[in-house]
Image 1: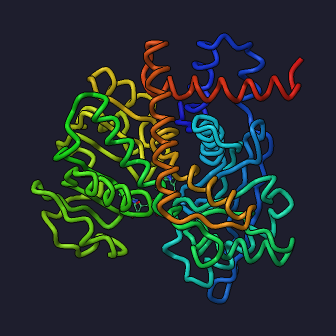
Image 2 (image 1 turned 90 degrees about the horizontal axis):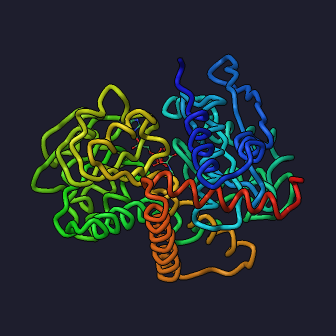
Length: 408
Ligand code: NAD
């Protein structure tokens, strides 16, 4: 059987729906996507044209306008975008922000694009999809392979077509209607959740050893804040390889490096070796499916905090839990990003800017509340944290569905 990321999410939805006693039809409604748009993007490259495929999948608007990132990566396909769109529905419901779920992407290796080509791809993506976007319809944000600069191009293209609406996209540069604090929000949330998980389990935060896969937006800020909270980051990797230092890596000192290539702060290791390092906390913050049947038995951590979306396959998740590993699921662990996007969106609508301290305070308080709630529900139903998170989210979305009158 071929692996389907979307099927894995839908299995979680079904499981939570059954625990909540929902009708099969209600569960089925929440398992399908409201709208899926596939576009072609002809891109002028050298003296020819390369046709790229782009996507926007809107999974649910039951609780508000759809919200979700745009990924530029060679492995992007419809199944992955559906899975990620659906995860956004559950994430926004879990942390109780007034959004639904969506995701977009372009199947392209961003490292092969010049800056001008990347801008052209983003602008064409926006032009082709403008009819389904907007601050009250569907609000994109950065994801793998895209960043604040890419979002600035999206906003600029959207403004040309629809007029001034900075809330049409989040994760923008601070100089261009972005919110101070948004860029670090996902990684900050991941680190806060790691600390809260250690505390809840009676383990020490200070000196806890951490290994992180990914040195992009999520990984580098997670590493920095883990260090600020007193943890010791002993291994970190990106696509160029990794570094390991049992005495701890000074993340502040390497933070400004674009990649880890040539960074000499310990022993060089392979990009995926970091996953098998003996540590207290493992944070996969790069790709999906990196912890799977092939390497689950070699994972050497007590806690896994899912910085990336779907870094564990369902089989690996089961095996590791049976071995006593505590796993904090993506929809909770990396939800600081969409929480931060919510703050940016509200500030844009109000045309009012918060100081970064207020942003951080709000983020930390709300993440702590979401974490506490998931724990409470896991105790109530005697289930693991992922199942508990889906119970909270599926309950909220099905209630919204019912109250809207979409069901008889
Ligand atoms: P990014 O593009 O900024 O960084 C990705 C990182 O992964 C880079 O350091 C890259 O070198 C590394 N990487 C790629 N392939 C690798 C490999 N084979 N081995 C080791 N490292 C590898 O992306 P990001 O925004 O940090 O997103 C990372 C993950 O977090 C994705 O799953 C994304 O969906 C998820 N996420 C991101 C946000 C956000 O706000 N950016 C929010 C929630 C979830």
